[in-house]
Image (cartoon, rainbow, N blue to C red; front, side, top):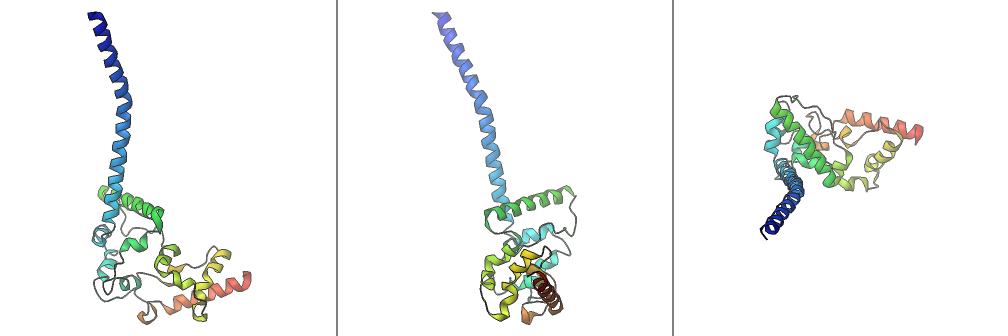
Length: 206
C-alpha cells in the first residue's frame, strides 16, 4: 500500500514538473508581451508631449519647439497658434496604426542612442514627412479643381511619371523662416522652381 502511495505521489510530482516545463516558457512569453505592450504605450504617451521631444532634440532642433511659444515665424509654428492641438508627432508620424508604430519604433531607437551617448545632433532626417502625413488634415487641397489649385491637383500626376517629383514639403517647408506669412509661409522663389519643374515634366512626359 505504501509503495502504491509513493508511486502515486511520484507520478503526481512528475506530472506537475512536466506541466511546469510548459508553463515557464508560456509565462515568459506573456511577460515579454506585457513589457513590450507597456513600453509601447509609454513611448506613445511620451511622444504626445512636445516638451519630451524637445528634451532630446537639442539645438538647433530645440529652436523649432521654442518658436511654437511665440508668434508664428514658420509653417510649423503656425500650426501651434491660437491654441491649436497639433503636436510634433501629428506631423512626424504617418497616418494609421502602422505609421504610429513606425514612429514610436524610430523614437525608441533614437532614445536608446541618446541615453547611450551615441546620438548625433542635429539628428539626421531618416524619415522625411510624406504627403500622406499632410493629407490627414489637408485632404481638401487635392479635391478642388479651381485653377488656382491646379498645382495640388496635378502633383500626383507628376509624381507618377517622375521619381524626383516634388512632395508637399518641397514647397511647404515646415521649419525654414524665409517664407512669406501672407501666403502660408511659402518662399516664392522655391515654389516657382517647383512649378517650372512640374510644367517641364508634364510637358515632356505627361
